[in-house]
Length: 283
Image (cartoon, rainbow, N blue to C red; front, side, top):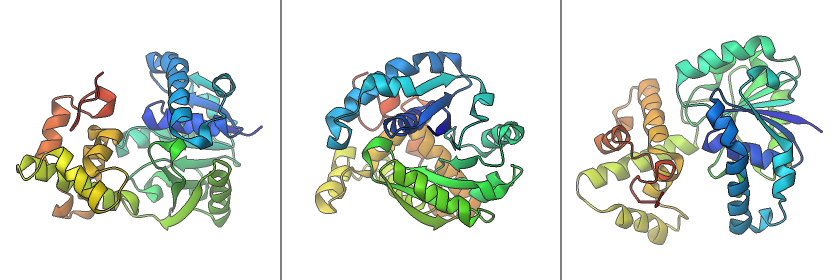
């Protein structure tokens, strides 16, 4: 049975781990925080129950089987024998750089590295490893188990073989691989973060309430979620970090982060994960 190493046991990391385990992979889920890893089994149990209720595709998932396939640890060296390593840590280039330099001596020639990032350059991260051709972006959409596509991002040095293997890997997870080229934000987040940021400006300017803004997108455009609901789901801190990356990379004022978003993050209103963002979630 193939093994996937998932680094980062936050919202995306747990979702990726569950999706891989549900599709026949052994998973090593790594996080530097022992409190986070010790909470993983209980959180996975709750998430699997939720996904079973939300999607017919997950209705036959067996919680004990998924739990049995996911091993949480604080030891990064545990990913050394993985066929794929999926990295999901914070959207901060300096933090990722430290991780990749630590990963470099651990990886075999056969291991492929998937960067699950929304904005950070795959080419820059690939250059930190011995073989940049083994590195590719796989931007899983949130929530991972419920969405049918992943943005596969080819870095400057990513090999054709790595692209082919990434297509196959994403396919085994029941998703369509949409291959795009490396540029900060790629397709999904270069567009979606403009929507979320401008929606936050509309709230701050008193033009409309969050419910009204999201209703325009859902009822007017047919989107399943509005931009502010999406921001709450992703995490407002992650949205702010991604906007900062886009602004820095492009030096384009259109990516200037809304003061409303920055103020909410400073106040600890991070969205679903904190119980309060543009909406209240009753934590």
